[in-house]
Amino acid sequence: MADVYLGLGSNLGDKAANLATALDRIAAFSTVLAVSSFHATDPVGYLDQDRFLNAAAHVSTDLEPAAFLARLLETELSLGRVRTIVNGPRIIDLDILLWDSLVIDTPGLSVPHPRMHQRLFVLDPLVEIAPDALHPRLQRTIRQLRETLHSSTV
Picture 1: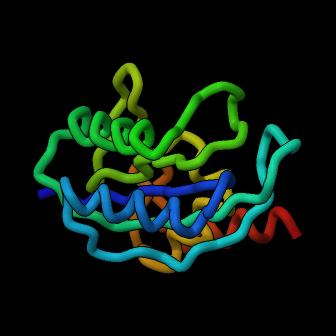
Picture 2 (picture 1 turned 135 degrees about the vertical axis):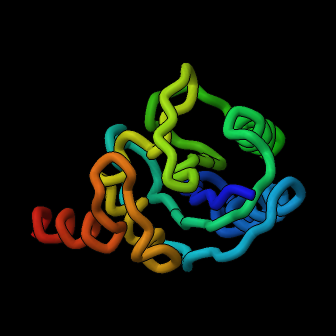
């Protein structure tokens, strides 16, 4: 069984319900071990859109990374995710942030998530459930990454 950390986000419709539904569907193919509180955040990149609700989840799975990603993408699609504008509005966004202590670089999947250490909307929820999880490329804990990013934005 692999320990996997996910980032979840929504900024269309009933955001909290979208996150809850996504978590229910993820529970159909993995074991949800912990979920952060939901965080209201400003959009990044494409700014002409509503605020997001973001969360992090810790799950356990016996699926391989590619198969797990395929299930996440199916979940997004089943909830109505349409990819039009990069970083644009979305009913649901599901990202693999960490997969055990692995570094994965394949077409379509990069773990750890390549920009997670630059995004408070990822680190703030993740630090609630995995403060001591180690970023395998940067060799720093989630707490350390968050503290560094918080101090650079103040």
